[in-house]
Length: 76
Image (cartoon, rainbow, N blue to C red; front, top):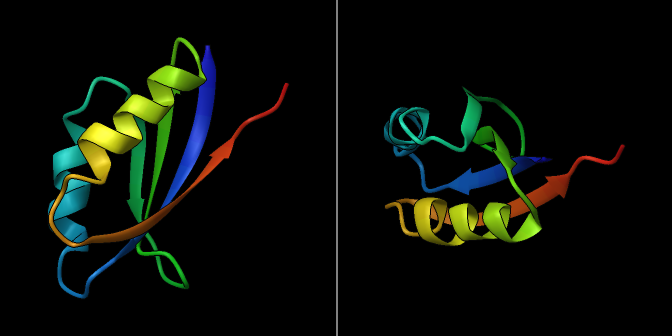
């Protein structure tokens, strides 16, 4: 199992909707709106790095208001 933190930069006014959307995703174990250079941090778990990549590409980047993401993969 691979775990990763996805740091998400958003257009102003979209973070609440994004967080709500991600909470329903099977791969997302936690989502928080935060202050600072990022607007939302999501924790993902997947079978491998490709599963994490698929969620970021298909489920996060496709959402309205996403400007940029940074994926931080957890190490053992």
